[in-house]
Length: 588
Image (cartoon, rainbow, N blue to C red):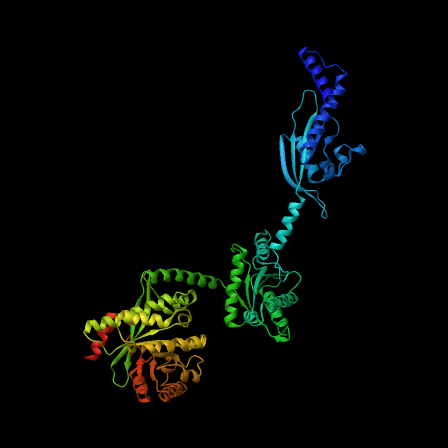
């Protein structure tokens, strides 16, 4: 073969040098030579390739390698070289684009495609390229195919796994968000035509903790099946987080469709769940958000449904999202950011509300109340204190209040040149008790200010005791080592048992102003106040009545044996300097 090529090459060179026409006997040899060279080149390629000739007649395959024959399902031995006889090229995306390429002016073109078969179809990277034309020869094109089927199928499999919850077999949050985004992007989308329900299982964490993860998984699977049974075939159910599920549903009759779906879900959960040998009743909270114009993404829709879900947990019924809920949430996050900066910069202040001994009228002490001025506005405590508790900033805020209150009391002592007969009361949050070492915080505050523990009263609500009674009992016992006084605030509004009054080292009960304010006109309120005062006297505790706004009310409470009074009859909360002046004026 090589010697034949060399001989033919020499004869060609001689003909060219003599500028004579190529001898006729060389034309078949040259054609065979070129075909042999082209075939050898194609066979050397690691990918499927073919050379297509386009002449006056129909385009045909001049030569191809084995990979191409296999992928194109073409056998040249059958004498079918025309493109119309090759299954892969006679129709479909490859054939259509190939014929368009022949007519166009591009030198090369590449694209991704499939062979069009739904089952067993292949995926290719296809490239067309026009070859250099030798004088007098027809146009030739190179067609190459890279089989991407394995890669595409692997990607599909991985994507399917990525979009499906492995435990329940339901779509996961990614798949759910994709579907919601698809609905929002649909040109035919109408506002109010779809809704998202967020469904959260109650008591799941208790089951998980007490019975183990396997029981928890079994509960999730059964819960998901019951949800499916309550939905329509067109509704989409997904597991969006641990024990939370999302539902995308079409609203044919408005929001009532979503509320009816919520009722069906509640109904299918009435029967108990059987786990091992136990039967457990499980309920759920449901929040709903309607897909509306202006909603940017699926994340926002689901977040809106979760706002409603949070409200549903506290109220106990299905809730529909309102835009004010998102505004309130953003407001809380804004307050959290600003509050953190304010605490670090010590930009908060304490106001002092006098506590008056009813029997003598003397000022016995002051309750320290946190105040915050921000951007020229007063942020009320009932707005920033819950944010501080939710974010954990209450620990820093509580320590600051302790330190500032005890230092202020020490400053008053120095201003008067003696230890004044005054106490200062500081409020404790249940979150603060559960997260902070209260005994260490109080010890540090007392030592830093140099005042005796008996001059500090710590107020905690009944809710703090219910929140974590064992931890509260340990904390209060530790505090008594420093002779600190303990007051139970807003007594009568919570659910404290009488046993806790016996076992906890409580020195003082503060009667909530809701009972005190109208006790002269309301016999029930008066009876409650009398009962609390009798109970305190029997247990050897002192009492403080909050919300005293008239002299008649103060006199009645003094007659009933109440120890201290607090309210606007005496004064509004005031600054540290004003509080010291107030004490001086009342002590003169």
